[in-house]
Image (cartoon, rainbow, N blue to C red):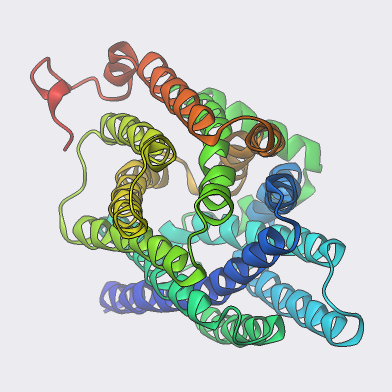
Length: 429
């Protein structure tokens, strides 16, 4: 009876988790869409746009190790709920500031920093709790449904943002975000984050007695025992730096260089999310991937090829509608490849990392993955203001493919998956 109850609760968690992520992501992405357009249309500078991206990345990169320790020491449910409430207050504060003093870049940057911290705490706590919320047999389904919720929101929010931008004020976008955040808090409060937890109360109490630095060192020491994960961290470090070419360049090229209309830009973002959605549905229904690192390797190669393809309309003279259709297709493929890269690796990490270390390990992974992103944002923001965008993209895409082929070479794949045979190396599932 107890096991039957747990399975029922886990099923409830699957869909509550998905819905809470859906509404929170919808509000966040509508807000991000509006703010990105505001910055680019007001300043016309890739550097100013990159500065806002840095405000999103830098705070969470610096604070992530401490967030991991806090997540492993204290109630993950409370961390998630308090973070979401703080998000609500931050957006409400920006709304009040706009109504009294008007919108300004410094106010946007400060709010972005706060939202970066709250989303980081919430994200690490939620990620660390997956095996406590969901039974082991449905981890891949849970990760895929999580991606589905984000994709649903990402499909709708750019379309809504593109239609609303220019017809309603920024405060309307903020009100949408506030309402979505409140709904997410209510849903998250009904979940049992310790349903399948393996961490005993005595162990948790001992962790609290450790100093913050001792806890961080313990997490690093544990991670050193996982050489394959360490390789993945170094790949993430370099790949995310090179992805700055896409993060800064895509919006800048379409909005500033190609003069794509806001609603059409929103639709290309929607195509990206549709690709994520369809592949998430696929992963939620199929059996678990056998060789996740191998799948992710070729997925990253695919991302590099697609990233280079973004530059094509800058080189060739093509009509507006062909250009728009091309970016729709390209972004659909890009979104699909993101899921191919992320989902198998996320499941692998959930199943190989001990529960009592998950907060610290996932926070270290996040720190390493994002450590060079702020530098990348600064460099690429400057490069796009100085050099032709097509050459920046093509060079970065070439480096991206080269890095993953070298660092995820066959010997590394065999270390991660010793059972891979010569014939199976060519397989991706």
